[in-house]
Length: 500
Image (cartoon, rainbow, N blue to C red; front, side):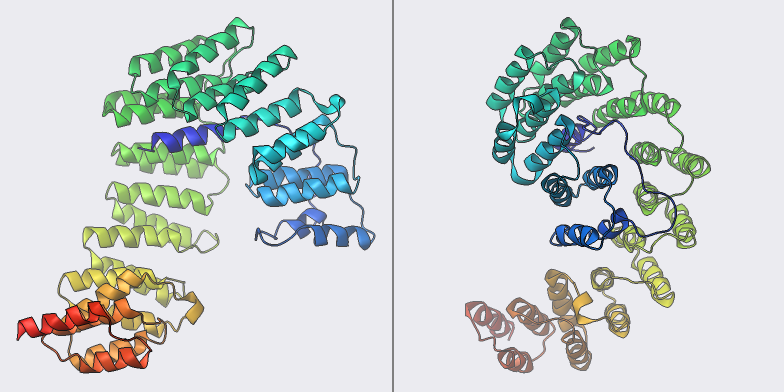
């Protein structure tokens, strides 16, 4: 089950506040260079957006306020908050448009995300009274809640009440999230009741937060009471998300029949082309061991959604290996390979890692070999873990073979990111079980990609000693690399004496 903290954290990320202007004009579909196409590829947070924006103006190109606002909107959606703030500040500074309270609310929210609530407060205080509307007040409240500032949140909430800025469920939802995040779930339902008493209709998120409050206490009766109330509310259109939240808690409580019933209800609420919804249901069915439902929903997703992106393949492959449906997972891997999607080793590595955990190192190696044959990228770590699994089984030949295959891929040194602990375990095992000639050949090749440190030399020495080999050459190599003997080295050499 997802940890309570993670689930509740996600709650606050679900469209709790929208500052989008009424109409946003997207780029024309014609294939031409636009400001958005210049900005979008700059994904590295350390790359500045301002030079590109300034260059656009200096070369005489038009800048439409609607397009810049769309860029900010999309960057926020993709969680590129630093860049979104940079573009928003540039738009304000250059006078691309007169900032409305909504624009100020967007910038305030971004300042809070990037710099924290103190800087957000300064920005809020610098606004004219005309711009201090429900939008900007709400954005500052959101900053306080996000940083668990209980006293500031409640004081600000009171000010909003006095000014008549608490007319939508969004503000109440923020306060409910505050209580959730500060481990005060008992106060959440009181906020829901206050909302209704003040004539503000709860929205889906309001009910969902309340359900989570009861679920976090494993109060299933309270959770179902809120769900029933939500289902009877004439202002609410039920959604798949709420039913999956309840199902998640049922799974945690091992109430499998109840969880399955909730998933059936969730499926009835699926909206066409909502890949995330299908992914969520597939994952939950996998946790319940419902292999037929996983396969069925994947087929339904493919027939309903226009295309499947890598995220969708990751979800279904993870779900299938979770329930030991490796044959089906490999079928989907083949399907993904011919989908035209960008290659991502994360997808086959799910199956490889699962094979390793099951001790099926032959199958893991076979998949790595196939990928290499097709000239698809793999990682040193994946080969190393498969090699270790062979070593556990006492098959030194296959261990060395795995690493030889990796060496033959001729990866650039910069691509070599292998866990040092994996290297240490390999050196220990190979040092003990392989011939001196094979070990020396292995070490010589490995050194082309990995800078040996003291721990690696110590592991190799232990392996030599356990295998009854002389360690003189290892000591010489260690000193040649500028690593002097220390207390741990002497302890290891002492092991040799004790074995004599």
